Length: 166
Image (cartoon, rainbow, N blue to C red):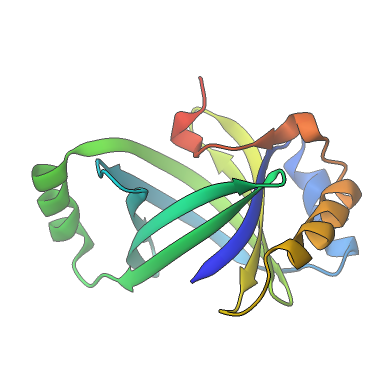
């Protein structure tokens, strides 16, 4: 699977949500997520746990025109505690991230408004691509949404939350 994404810092989550809803984004819900990242030699591997399930996610990101092109695979996990223990022992834990995520959606776009423990408030726009879709066509749409959300280029972040300096 593939998506184009942009991650950014946010000074005001409530204002960002109001602007997003004015753009036609619909709130799907708020989730508490616990991500455990494991030491791997290729890309990133994380176990995401939340109240309604758990998933093992492997992804590789490539920087492209100010945005990230992400190739990823997701597998549902029925025994997350056991898997976390097994992978922690076998691979080692790189980092842990806890966040409260408000998920908004509009067509093939997902907007995440995150409050990340020990890091602050952030947002992330993801445009899900089909197999033949050119990622470049999403850049203009994402750039327009960033402008409408009043996100400047200085607010863009090209790393995972755990890689941010505290």
